Image (cartoon, rainbow, N blue to C red; front, side, top):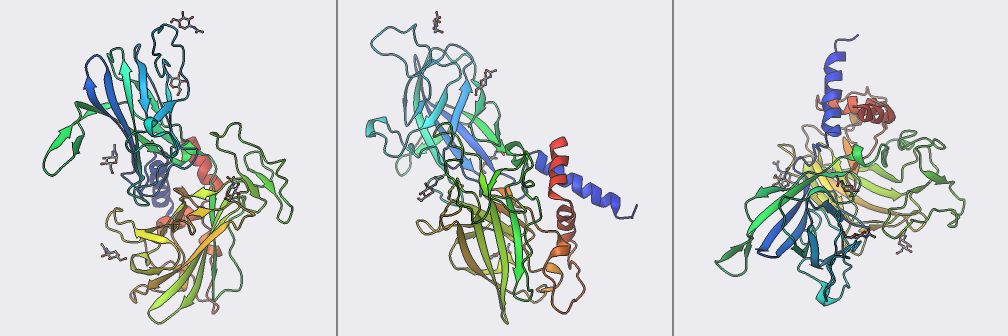
Amino acid sequence: MSKWASPLMLLVFVFLFEVADGYDPMDPQGNITINWDFKTITDVYTVIVSIHNYQLYRHIEPPGWKLSWTWSGSEVIWDMKGAETTEQGNCSTYRGDTIPHSCEKNPVVVDLPADAPYNAQAGNCCRGGVLTSIVQDPTRYMSAFEMIVRNPMRSKPSNFSIGVAGYTCGDPVDVPPSKYRFDGQRYTQALKTWQVTCSYSQFRESDMPSCCVSLSAFYYQSIVSCPDCSCGCQGSPAASQCISEGQQPNYLQIPKAKSQDEPISPVVMCTQHMCPIRVHWHLKSNYKDYWRVKVTITNLNFVKNYSDWSLVMQHPNLGSLAQVFSFNFQPLFQIGETNDTVMLWGIERYNDMLLQSGASGNVQSEMLLKKDPREFTFKGGWGFPRRVSFNGHDCIMPSPDAYPALPNGSPRKFPTSAAVHQVVFMGLSPLVLYVVVLLL
Ligand SMILES: *[C@@H]1O[C@H](CO)[C@@H](O)[C@H](O)[C@H]1NC(C)=O
Ligand SMILES: *[C@@H]1O[C@H](CO)[C@@H](O)[C@H](O)[C@H]1NC(C)=O
Ligand SMILES: *[C@@H]1O[C@H](CO)[C@@H](O)[C@H](O)[C@H]1NC(C)=O
Ligand SMILES: *[C@@H]1O[C@H](CO)[C@@H](O)[C@H](O)[C@H]1NC(C)=O
Ligand SMILES: *[C@@H]1O[C@H](CO)[C@@H](O)[C@H](O)[C@H]1NC(C)=O
């Protein structure tokens, strides 16, 4: 056993525990917070429920959130604005003129569409359950509805869920009441506020990666493709259904969702990697003070358009990103001391929708980076990203020994010790990594 074996194993396990725990080093604070703000607590409770997506780069896409919980007693939802429950449930004990909105013990609440009738709406409602990340659109990362509850709430409801794969929610806790400001100097506040926090884990969402990275460089004659079986092997039971290139997709064979609300499982183009999303990093040009990279995201999924997609990339030079030509971008400073991670996303109505495969399913942009003469080099794969994630899903990178080499065959070496973590991570076969994580 080499003297490196134990420190390296330690690193691997530290990394794996981080991920398995739902901890995301690129967004350590990220969570979805649900507030219950009580406006009246007399014979009826009026509650404003708001859902805040405090994640830097992960959004809730269609079909959107579905908030559910379990009442502790005989509570009923008398009325609701800005959302509705999917079931009215058994309200047979109510025989008056008005019948409650929902008598379900486990109500499931869904958002209304944007064109809902005006009198059914409430402030910040009606976005079809879609929430952007907080970086992407600070006006659409939260959503709210109002409900009137009857029968005493003797204890707090429990068993909260937002109905989106990968998220788990805790139980409500008392927090200081939310405050509202209507004019210059006066605040009003809720009578009391309960808060539920939900966290995300990629490994809870899926046991298979969904994205991989390929590389090329102006000085290298071929393309380093995504590692084989990055997202499963063709024909294996865990892999997605696939359609060969050139073969006209037979839409009759593509599974239809059971209902409009169900996500459709991917049907991808048959490739060696089988990923629905491929991110390609092309090292395009070298200037005196700058260098240029072209990034292309290709959708190989025939049955999904990715709306409001986002890409997060880590590279030591990204702190000196001078220009991005066709995407929005923002450095993610929140990540400790480092300045090497940026988030990129589409420009509204231009390329914020990554269309399904077969319908021009790609978006691309060039980036201009200012060289830092102290560390800039094309040697040892330095010019390629350390980490890439699409919509908050980590992408599988080629192994470092496959990286485009400089033509003169200069010796390959990683210049910084920081790269060790990466080497360890990438050196493991992606499937082995996932299997180990699942076992933990
Ligand atoms: C959830 O996110 C908010 C906003 O970033 C943060 O203030 C809060 O501490 C987070 N909560 C948890 C439990 O991490
Ligand atoms: C509905 O609730 C009433 C009263 O709790 C009960 O008697 C009745 O059996 C329930 N009906 C159904 C169909 O569950
Ligand atoms: C928790 O909620 C689910 C529906 O989201 C429901 O099927 C289940 O019975 C609930 N669990 C408890 C203990 O009530
Ligand atoms: C994706 O968008 C295109 C163009 O708007 C549309 O024709 C297609 O039906 C959409 N596909 C899915 C799966 O929603
Ligand atoms: C990070 O880079 C940006 C430019 O992209 C710069 O404005 C900022 O000052 C840098 N921050 C740190 C902490 O180095």
